[in-house]
Length: 153
Image 1 (cartoon, one colour):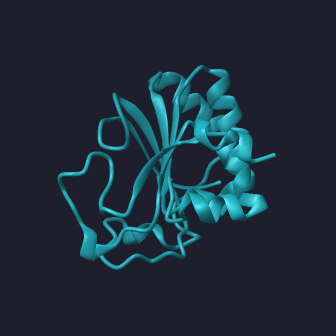
Image 2 (cartoon, helix red, strand yellow):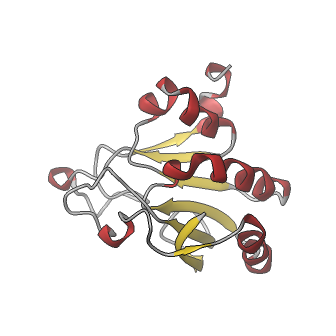
């Protein structure tokens, strides 16, 4: 997996102290993005699931997958999520895709059963709202995936 950074003990990417993993690569390229350096798919470093798990276990926090957009690395993210859940950790995922786009794509839809919460939708500069908790713009939603699990089969 291509990873830009790992932040342990952050409080801005979901509730409580979290380990946030920033994945490389994003084609959404939202104007006003707070992390445009994450757009390059060859950015960061190649990191194995075992390396990530060692850090997650050491930090012992719930986990947030962000970026870039982690869904561009869906095939690598899914086994990572399984191992994180095996530790009993909660997983939030930030993506520029909407949950409707995710549900319409069989490849992406697999993420619904793999994470607990999705913060969906592109950042829209005209809807920027710093009063929103865990989101940057008013169009973005906090989606509890349990509400969608039955629709993935």
